[in-house]
Length: 299
Length: 152
Image 1 (cartoon, helix red, strand yellow):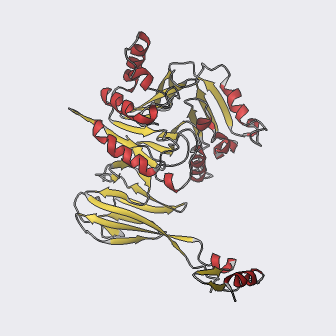
Image 2 (cartoon, helix red, strand yellow; image 1 turned 30 degrees about the vertical axis):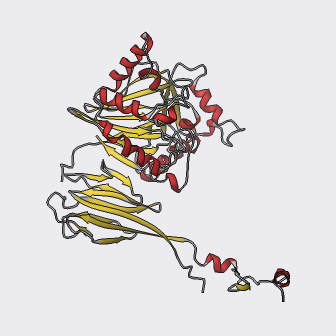
Image 3 (cartoon, chains in turn purple, red; image 1 turned 90 degrees about the vertical axis):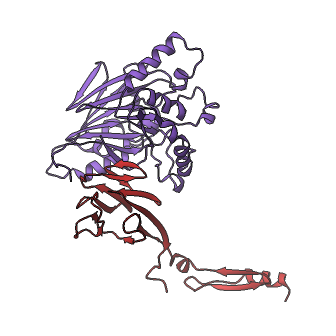
Protein backbone atom coordinates (compact mmCIF):
# COMPACT_ATOMS: atom_id res chain seq x y z
CA UNK A 1 0.00 0.00 0.00
CA UNK A 2 1.14 3.51 -0.77
CA UNK A 3 1.70 6.11 1.99
CA UNK A 4 -1.74 7.37 3.09
CA UNK A 5 -0.72 11.05 3.30
CA UNK A 6 -0.38 11.51 -0.45
CA UNK A 7 -3.05 14.00 -1.63
CA UNK A 8 -4.39 12.93 -4.95
CA UNK A 9 -5.94 15.09 -7.62
CA UNK A 10 -9.10 13.32 -8.71
CA UNK A 11 -10.90 13.78 -12.00
CA UNK A 12 -14.47 12.46 -12.22
CA UNK A 13 -16.65 12.30 -15.31
CA UNK A 14 -20.30 13.03 -14.46
CA UNK A 15 -21.39 13.61 -18.04
CA UNK A 16 -19.54 12.80 -21.26
CA UNK A 17 -22.21 13.00 -23.96
CA UNK A 18 -22.34 15.84 -26.45
CA UNK A 19 -25.30 17.86 -27.71
CA UNK A 20 -28.18 16.10 -25.96
CA UNK A 21 -28.60 13.55 -23.20
CA UNK A 22 -29.03 9.97 -24.41
CA UNK A 23 -30.46 7.66 -21.75
CA UNK A 24 -30.91 3.98 -22.57
CA UNK A 25 -29.19 0.62 -22.57
CA UNK A 26 -27.05 1.33 -25.62
CA UNK A 27 -25.31 4.24 -23.90
CA UNK A 28 -25.07 3.11 -20.28
CA UNK A 29 -21.38 2.23 -20.44
CA UNK A 30 -20.04 5.58 -21.66
CA UNK A 31 -23.01 7.46 -20.27
CA UNK A 32 -25.91 9.54 -21.48
CA UNK A 33 -25.51 12.76 -19.47
CA UNK A 34 -24.15 15.90 -21.10
CA UNK A 35 -20.80 17.41 -20.03
CA UNK A 36 -19.77 17.81 -16.44
CA UNK A 37 -16.33 16.97 -15.01
CA UNK A 38 -14.91 17.63 -11.57
CA UNK A 39 -11.32 18.13 -10.55
CA UNK A 40 -10.80 17.88 -6.81
CA UNK A 41 -7.72 18.29 -4.70
CA UNK A 42 -8.15 18.07 -0.93
CA UNK A 43 -10.97 20.53 -0.11
CA UNK A 44 -10.90 22.32 -3.46
CA UNK A 45 -13.53 21.41 -6.04
CA UNK A 46 -13.51 22.69 -9.59
CA UNK A 47 -16.51 21.86 -11.79
CA UNK A 48 -16.15 22.01 -15.55
CA UNK A 49 -19.48 22.64 -17.27
CA UNK A 50 -23.02 22.18 -16.02
CA UNK A 51 -24.56 19.71 -18.46
CA UNK A 52 -27.10 17.20 -17.18
CA UNK A 53 -24.30 15.27 -15.46
CA UNK A 54 -24.12 17.98 -12.79
CA UNK A 55 -27.41 16.67 -11.33
CA UNK A 56 -25.73 13.48 -10.08
CA UNK A 57 -22.74 15.47 -8.87
CA UNK A 58 -25.13 17.63 -6.82
CA UNK A 59 -26.76 14.58 -5.25
CA UNK A 60 -23.33 13.17 -4.38
CA UNK A 61 -22.13 16.45 -2.87
CA UNK A 62 -25.22 16.78 -0.70
CA UNK A 63 -25.09 13.13 0.44
CA UNK A 64 -21.44 13.44 1.40
CA UNK A 65 -21.64 16.78 3.17
CA UNK A 66 -22.82 15.85 6.63
CA UNK A 67 -24.46 18.35 8.95
CA UNK A 68 -21.21 18.95 10.86
CA UNK A 69 -19.22 19.81 7.75
CA UNK A 70 -18.42 23.30 6.55
CA UNK A 71 -20.61 24.71 3.75
CA UNK A 72 -19.80 23.74 0.20
CA UNK A 73 -17.53 26.07 -1.73
CA UNK A 74 -17.72 25.32 -5.44
CA UNK A 75 -16.18 26.83 -8.55
CA UNK A 76 -17.94 26.16 -11.84
CA UNK A 77 -16.12 26.98 -15.07
CA UNK A 78 -18.32 27.04 -18.18
CA UNK A 79 -16.82 26.33 -21.59
CA UNK A 80 -19.80 28.16 -23.11
CA UNK A 81 -23.53 28.42 -22.66
CA UNK A 82 -24.99 26.04 -25.21
CA UNK A 83 -27.76 23.93 -23.68
CA UNK A 84 -25.73 20.79 -23.25
CA UNK A 85 -23.26 22.68 -21.03
CA UNK A 86 -25.68 24.54 -18.75
CA UNK A 87 -28.91 22.56 -18.73
CA UNK A 88 -28.20 20.70 -15.50
CA UNK A 89 -27.71 23.84 -13.41
CA UNK A 90 -31.41 24.22 -12.40
CA UNK A 91 -31.23 20.63 -11.07
CA UNK A 92 -28.02 21.12 -9.08
CA UNK A 93 -29.07 20.50 -5.47
CA UNK A 94 -26.29 22.50 -3.74
CA UNK A 95 -27.57 25.62 -5.54
CA UNK A 96 -30.69 25.33 -3.37
CA UNK A 97 -28.75 25.18 -0.10
CA UNK A 98 -28.39 28.54 1.60
CA UNK A 99 -24.78 28.24 2.78
CA UNK A 100 -23.33 26.94 -0.49
CA UNK A 101 -20.91 29.31 -2.17
CA UNK A 102 -21.01 28.84 -5.91
CA UNK A 103 -18.85 30.93 -8.22
CA UNK A 104 -19.58 30.58 -11.91
CA UNK A 105 -16.91 31.60 -14.42
CA UNK A 106 -17.28 32.10 -18.16
CA UNK A 107 -16.14 33.97 -21.20
CA UNK A 108 -16.22 37.77 -21.09
CA UNK A 109 -16.51 38.01 -24.85
CA UNK A 110 -20.18 37.30 -25.31
CA UNK A 111 -22.71 39.74 -26.67
CA UNK A 112 -24.82 39.22 -23.57
CA UNK A 113 -23.77 39.07 -19.96
CA UNK A 114 -23.27 35.57 -18.59
CA UNK A 115 -25.69 36.15 -15.72
CA UNK A 116 -28.53 37.08 -18.07
CA UNK A 117 -27.93 33.99 -20.23
CA UNK A 118 -28.15 31.74 -17.17
CA UNK A 119 -31.16 33.63 -15.82
CA UNK A 120 -33.00 33.30 -19.12
CA UNK A 121 -32.59 29.54 -19.03
CA UNK A 122 -34.75 29.65 -15.91
CA UNK A 123 -37.34 31.98 -17.38
CA UNK A 124 -40.87 30.94 -16.35
CA UNK A 125 -41.64 29.87 -19.92
CA UNK A 126 -38.91 27.23 -19.71
CA UNK A 127 -38.64 26.34 -16.03
CA UNK A 128 -40.90 26.86 -13.01
CA UNK A 129 -38.21 28.16 -10.65
CA UNK A 130 -36.46 31.46 -11.24
CA UNK A 131 -32.71 31.77 -10.81
CA UNK A 132 -33.34 34.29 -8.05
CA UNK A 133 -34.94 31.44 -6.05
CA UNK A 134 -31.62 29.60 -5.82
CA UNK A 135 -30.73 30.19 -2.21
CA UNK A 136 -27.00 29.51 -2.47
CA UNK A 137 -24.60 32.42 -2.57
CA UNK A 138 -24.02 32.54 -6.30
CA UNK A 139 -21.60 34.92 -7.93
CA UNK A 140 -21.18 35.05 -11.68
CA UNK A 141 -17.81 36.07 -12.95
CA UNK A 142 -16.91 36.94 -16.52
CA UNK A 143 -13.21 36.17 -16.53
CA UNK A 144 -11.01 39.23 -16.90
CA UNK A 145 -7.75 38.03 -15.39
CA UNK A 146 -5.26 35.81 -17.21
CA UNK A 147 -4.82 33.44 -14.32
CA UNK A 148 -7.33 32.41 -11.67
CA UNK A 149 -6.22 30.82 -8.43
CA UNK A 150 -8.65 28.57 -6.57
CA UNK A 151 -6.93 27.10 -3.50
CA UNK A 152 -3.94 25.13 -4.80
CA UNK A 153 -5.29 25.11 -8.38
CA UNK A 154 -3.99 27.67 -10.88
CA UNK A 155 -6.23 28.02 -13.91
CA UNK A 156 -5.35 29.56 -17.26
CA UNK A 157 -7.70 29.80 -20.21
CA UNK A 158 -8.04 30.66 -23.87
CA UNK A 159 -10.90 31.50 -26.19
CA UNK A 160 -11.65 28.96 -28.91
CA UNK A 161 -13.11 30.57 -32.02
CA UNK A 162 -14.00 27.49 -34.06
CA UNK A 163 -17.30 26.73 -32.40
CA UNK A 164 -20.54 28.59 -33.17
CA UNK A 165 -20.57 31.43 -30.62
CA UNK A 166 -17.10 30.48 -29.36
CA UNK A 167 -16.01 28.51 -26.33
CA UNK A 168 -13.27 28.56 -23.69
CA UNK A 169 -10.63 25.95 -22.91
CA UNK A 170 -9.17 25.70 -19.44
CA UNK A 171 -5.81 24.52 -18.11
CA UNK A 172 -5.70 23.42 -14.47
CA UNK A 173 -2.30 23.28 -12.81
CA UNK A 174 -1.95 21.45 -9.51
CA UNK A 175 1.24 20.23 -7.81
CA UNK A 176 3.23 20.36 -11.04
CA UNK A 177 0.57 18.48 -13.03
CA UNK A 178 -1.56 19.92 -15.81
CA UNK A 179 -5.09 18.99 -16.85
CA UNK A 180 -6.58 20.58 -19.96
CA UNK A 181 -10.32 20.70 -20.65
CA UNK A 182 -10.81 21.65 -24.29
CA UNK A 183 -14.25 20.79 -25.56
CA UNK A 184 -16.50 22.15 -28.30
CA UNK A 185 -13.88 23.19 -30.79
CA UNK A 186 -13.40 22.24 -34.44
CA UNK A 187 -9.69 21.46 -34.58
CA UNK A 188 -9.99 20.25 -38.18
CA UNK A 189 -10.49 23.90 -39.19
CA UNK A 190 -7.14 24.75 -37.65
CA UNK A 191 -5.02 21.70 -38.40
CA UNK A 192 -6.49 20.27 -41.61
CA UNK A 193 -6.70 23.40 -43.74
CA UNK A 194 -4.50 23.36 -46.77
CA UNK A 195 -2.68 25.63 -47.37
CA UNK A 196 -2.30 27.05 -43.90
CA UNK A 197 -2.69 30.77 -43.49
CA UNK A 198 -1.35 33.16 -40.91
CA UNK A 199 -4.41 32.78 -38.68
CA UNK A 200 -4.44 28.98 -38.66
CA UNK A 201 -0.68 28.91 -38.09
CA UNK A 202 -1.10 31.12 -35.05
CA UNK A 203 -4.07 29.14 -33.76
CA UNK A 204 -2.21 25.83 -34.23
CA UNK A 205 0.73 27.09 -32.23
CA UNK A 206 -1.52 28.49 -29.54
CA UNK A 207 -3.41 25.20 -29.16
CA UNK A 208 -0.31 22.99 -29.20
CA UNK A 209 1.38 25.19 -26.65
CA UNK A 210 -1.72 25.14 -24.39
CA UNK A 211 -1.96 21.34 -24.35
CA UNK A 212 1.82 20.79 -24.41
CA UNK A 213 2.87 17.89 -22.15
CA UNK A 214 -0.48 17.88 -20.38
CA UNK A 215 -0.83 15.02 -17.93
CA UNK A 216 -4.46 14.70 -18.99
CA UNK A 217 -6.27 16.25 -21.94
CA UNK A 218 -10.06 16.02 -22.02
CA UNK A 219 -10.90 16.84 -25.61
CA UNK A 220 -13.90 17.02 -27.92
CA UNK A 221 -13.77 14.07 -30.30
CA UNK A 222 -17.37 13.92 -31.44
CA UNK A 223 -17.00 12.65 -34.98
CA UNK A 224 -15.31 9.95 -36.94
CA UNK A 225 -13.30 11.11 -39.94
CA UNK A 226 -16.16 10.10 -42.27
CA UNK A 227 -18.85 11.80 -40.20
CA UNK A 228 -16.87 15.01 -40.08
CA UNK A 229 -17.07 15.46 -43.84
CA UNK A 230 -20.82 16.12 -43.57
CA UNK A 231 -20.58 18.09 -40.33
CA UNK A 232 -18.06 20.74 -41.26
CA UNK A 233 -18.77 23.97 -39.44
CA UNK A 234 -20.73 22.32 -36.62
CA UNK A 235 -17.97 23.18 -34.15
CA UNK A 236 -16.66 19.73 -33.20
CA UNK A 237 -13.51 17.79 -34.01
CA UNK A 238 -12.85 14.52 -35.74
CA UNK A 239 -11.14 11.90 -33.60
CA UNK A 240 -7.95 11.38 -35.68
CA UNK A 241 -7.13 15.11 -35.56
CA UNK A 242 -7.52 15.20 -31.79
CA UNK A 243 -5.25 12.17 -31.42
CA UNK A 244 -2.59 13.47 -33.82
CA UNK A 245 -2.38 16.91 -32.23
CA UNK A 246 -2.32 15.51 -28.69
CA UNK A 247 0.48 13.15 -29.65
CA UNK A 248 2.39 15.96 -31.33
CA UNK A 249 2.11 18.05 -28.16
CA UNK A 250 3.38 15.25 -25.91
CA UNK A 251 0.11 14.73 -24.02
CA UNK A 252 0.37 11.82 -21.58
CA UNK A 253 -3.30 10.78 -21.30
CA UNK A 254 -6.02 11.70 -23.77
CA UNK A 255 -9.69 11.32 -22.84
CA UNK A 256 -11.94 11.56 -25.88
CA UNK A 257 -15.03 13.39 -24.73
CA UNK A 258 -18.36 14.90 -25.89
CA UNK A 259 -19.50 11.68 -27.55
CA UNK A 260 -21.93 12.02 -30.40
CA UNK A 261 -25.55 11.21 -29.38
CA UNK A 262 -25.72 8.64 -32.19
CA UNK A 263 -22.69 6.71 -30.94
CA UNK A 264 -23.64 3.60 -28.95
CA UNK A 265 -21.35 1.87 -26.46
CA UNK A 266 -20.37 -0.79 -28.97
CA UNK A 267 -19.65 1.87 -31.59
CA UNK A 268 -17.38 3.73 -29.16
CA UNK A 269 -15.63 0.46 -28.24
CA UNK A 270 -15.01 -0.14 -31.96
CA UNK A 271 -13.71 3.41 -32.37
CA UNK A 272 -11.20 2.81 -29.61
CA UNK A 273 -10.04 -0.41 -31.27
CA UNK A 274 -9.59 1.36 -34.60
CA UNK A 275 -7.76 4.37 -33.21
CA UNK A 276 -5.65 2.96 -30.38
CA UNK A 277 -2.60 2.27 -32.55
CA UNK A 278 -2.57 5.98 -33.49
CA UNK A 279 -1.67 6.90 -29.93
CA UNK A 280 1.79 5.33 -30.14
CA UNK A 281 4.76 6.93 -31.77
CA UNK A 282 8.48 6.50 -31.48
CA UNK A 283 9.63 7.49 -28.03
CA UNK A 284 6.21 8.54 -26.81
CA UNK A 285 3.30 6.53 -25.54
CA UNK A 286 0.08 8.40 -25.00
CA UNK A 287 -2.68 6.64 -23.10
CA UNK A 288 -5.85 6.96 -25.17
CA UNK A 289 -9.33 6.25 -23.86
CA UNK A 290 -12.93 7.29 -24.25
CA UNK A 291 -14.22 9.26 -21.23
CA UNK A 292 -16.86 7.31 -19.39
CA UNK A 293 -19.52 8.54 -17.00
CA UNK A 294 -18.97 7.35 -13.43
CA UNK A 295 -15.21 7.03 -13.80
CA UNK A 296 -12.71 8.70 -11.44
CA UNK A 297 -9.03 8.97 -12.35
CA UNK A 298 -6.11 10.41 -10.46
CA UNK A 299 -3.03 12.22 -11.65
CA UNK B 1 -68.06 -24.71 -35.47
CA UNK B 2 -66.07 -22.88 -38.14
CA UNK B 3 -62.93 -20.92 -37.28
CA UNK B 4 -64.80 -17.66 -37.91
CA UNK B 5 -67.62 -18.62 -35.59
CA UNK B 6 -65.09 -19.51 -32.88
CA UNK B 7 -63.47 -16.09 -33.19
CA UNK B 8 -66.81 -14.26 -33.05
CA UNK B 9 -67.84 -16.20 -29.97
CA UNK B 10 -64.62 -15.54 -28.10
CA UNK B 11 -64.94 -11.78 -28.65
CA UNK B 12 -67.63 -11.38 -26.04
CA UNK B 13 -66.01 -13.63 -23.47
CA UNK B 14 -65.19 -11.99 -20.16
CA UNK B 15 -61.92 -12.73 -18.46
CA UNK B 16 -62.08 -11.91 -14.77
CA UNK B 17 -59.18 -10.01 -13.25
CA UNK B 18 -56.96 -12.08 -11.01
CA UNK B 19 -57.73 -15.25 -12.90
CA UNK B 20 -54.77 -17.26 -14.06
CA UNK B 21 -55.70 -16.51 -17.64
CA UNK B 22 -57.63 -18.34 -20.33
CA UNK B 23 -56.45 -20.18 -23.35
CA UNK B 24 -58.21 -20.59 -26.69
CA UNK B 25 -57.10 -22.66 -29.58
CA UNK B 26 -57.77 -21.42 -33.10
CA UNK B 27 -56.29 -23.93 -35.47
CA UNK B 28 -52.58 -23.13 -35.58
CA UNK B 29 -52.86 -20.08 -33.33
CA UNK B 30 -53.10 -20.17 -29.55
CA UNK B 31 -54.06 -17.03 -27.66
CA UNK B 32 -53.14 -16.83 -24.00
CA UNK B 33 -54.90 -14.19 -21.96
CA UNK B 34 -53.09 -13.13 -18.80
CA UNK B 35 -54.44 -11.02 -16.02
CA UNK B 36 -52.34 -8.03 -14.98
CA UNK B 37 -51.54 -9.73 -11.67
CA UNK B 38 -50.22 -12.85 -13.34
CA UNK B 39 -48.21 -10.75 -15.73
CA UNK B 40 -46.81 -8.54 -12.98
CA UNK B 41 -45.91 -11.63 -10.94
CA UNK B 42 -42.63 -11.96 -12.77
CA UNK B 43 -41.65 -8.31 -12.51
CA UNK B 44 -39.49 -6.50 -11.41
CA UNK B 45 -36.22 -7.66 -12.82
CA UNK B 46 -33.61 -8.77 -10.36
CA UNK B 47 -30.00 -7.88 -10.90
CA UNK B 48 -27.35 -10.53 -10.52
CA UNK B 49 -23.70 -9.85 -10.92
CA UNK B 50 -20.58 -11.99 -10.88
CA UNK B 51 -16.85 -11.75 -10.91
CA UNK B 52 -15.12 -14.39 -12.95
CA UNK B 53 -11.42 -14.72 -12.30
CA UNK B 54 -9.93 -15.01 -15.77
CA UNK B 55 -6.40 -15.59 -14.60
CA UNK B 56 -3.63 -16.26 -14.40
CA UNK B 57 -4.19 -17.10 -10.68
CA UNK B 58 -7.49 -18.61 -9.55
CA UNK B 59 -8.67 -19.04 -13.13
CA UNK B 60 -12.31 -20.04 -13.49
CA UNK B 61 -13.38 -19.02 -9.98
CA UNK B 62 -16.78 -17.30 -9.94
CA UNK B 63 -17.97 -15.02 -7.16
CA UNK B 64 -21.56 -13.83 -7.04
CA UNK B 65 -21.84 -10.25 -5.81
CA UNK B 66 -24.47 -9.20 -3.32
CA UNK B 67 -25.38 -5.85 -1.83
CA UNK B 68 -22.71 -5.98 0.90
CA UNK B 69 -19.32 -4.38 0.30
CA UNK B 70 -16.54 -6.79 -0.57
CA UNK B 71 -12.80 -6.33 -0.36
CA UNK B 72 -10.43 -7.85 -2.87
CA UNK B 73 -6.89 -8.40 -1.76
CA UNK B 74 -4.14 -10.65 -0.48
CA UNK B 75 -5.22 -10.56 3.17
CA UNK B 76 -6.99 -13.72 4.45
CA UNK B 77 -9.80 -11.47 5.72
CA UNK B 78 -10.70 -10.37 2.18
CA UNK B 79 -13.96 -11.67 0.76
CA UNK B 80 -12.21 -12.23 -2.56
CA UNK B 81 -8.69 -13.37 -1.81
CA UNK B 82 -6.09 -12.95 -4.54
CA UNK B 83 -2.70 -14.33 -3.59
CA UNK B 84 -0.19 -12.94 -6.13
CA UNK B 85 2.42 -10.70 -4.53
CA UNK B 86 1.51 -7.72 -6.74
CA UNK B 87 -1.89 -7.60 -5.09
CA UNK B 88 -2.04 -5.38 -2.00
CA UNK B 89 -3.40 -6.77 1.26
CA UNK B 90 -6.57 -4.70 0.90
CA UNK B 91 -6.46 -3.77 -2.74
CA UNK B 92 -9.96 -2.74 -3.85
CA UNK B 93 -13.49 -2.41 -2.55
CA UNK B 94 -16.60 -3.25 -4.52
CA UNK B 95 -19.81 -1.65 -3.36
CA UNK B 96 -23.44 -1.52 -4.50
CA UNK B 97 -24.95 1.93 -4.64
CA UNK B 98 -27.95 3.30 -6.57
CA UNK B 99 -28.48 -0.18 -8.03
CA UNK B 100 -25.03 -0.17 -9.59
CA UNK B 101 -21.76 -1.84 -8.68
CA UNK B 102 -18.69 0.33 -8.22
CA UNK B 103 -15.04 -0.53 -7.72
CA UNK B 104 -12.67 1.63 -5.72
CA UNK B 105 -8.91 1.48 -5.32
CA UNK B 106 -7.94 1.25 -1.64
CA UNK B 107 -4.66 3.10 -2.15
CA UNK B 108 -3.07 -0.06 -3.51
CA UNK B 109 0.52 -0.15 -4.73
CA UNK B 110 -0.23 -1.34 -8.24
CA UNK B 111 -3.61 0.21 -8.87
CA UNK B 112 -6.95 -0.90 -10.25
CA UNK B 113 -7.53 -1.04 -13.99
CA UNK B 114 -10.89 -1.17 -15.75
CA UNK B 115 -10.60 -2.08 -19.43
CA UNK B 116 -6.94 -1.08 -19.26
CA UNK B 117 -7.51 2.36 -17.71
CA UNK B 118 -6.12 3.06 -14.27
CA UNK B 119 -8.99 4.27 -12.12
CA UNK B 120 -9.53 5.44 -8.58
CA UNK B 121 -13.19 4.56 -8.77
CA UNK B 122 -15.50 3.35 -11.52
CA UNK B 123 -19.07 2.22 -12.08
CA UNK B 124 -18.97 -1.33 -13.41
CA UNK B 125 -20.79 -2.39 -16.56
CA UNK B 126 -21.39 -5.80 -18.04
CA UNK B 127 -18.24 -7.31 -19.55
CA UNK B 128 -15.85 -4.86 -17.92
CA UNK B 129 -12.39 -6.33 -17.50
CA UNK B 130 -10.75 -5.50 -14.22
CA UNK B 131 -7.08 -5.99 -13.46
CA UNK B 132 -5.70 -6.07 -9.95
CA UNK B 133 -2.00 -6.79 -9.40
CA UNK B 134 -1.87 -8.85 -12.58
CA UNK B 135 -5.07 -10.81 -11.88
CA UNK B 136 -7.71 -10.36 -14.56
CA UNK B 137 -11.34 -10.41 -13.50
CA UNK B 138 -14.42 -10.24 -15.70
CA UNK B 139 -17.51 -8.46 -14.41
CA UNK B 140 -20.78 -9.92 -15.65
CA UNK B 141 -24.22 -8.64 -14.94
CA UNK B 142 -27.55 -10.13 -15.87
CA UNK B 143 -31.13 -9.14 -15.34
CA UNK B 144 -33.51 -11.93 -14.50
CA UNK B 145 -37.21 -12.07 -13.81
CA UNK B 146 -37.87 -12.17 -10.12
CA UNK B 147 -41.00 -13.87 -8.80
CA UNK B 148 -43.25 -11.47 -7.00
CA UNK B 149 -44.03 -12.93 -3.55
CA UNK B 150 -47.73 -12.06 -3.81
CA UNK B 151 -48.21 -14.04 -7.00
CA UNK B 152 -48.96 -17.73 -6.97
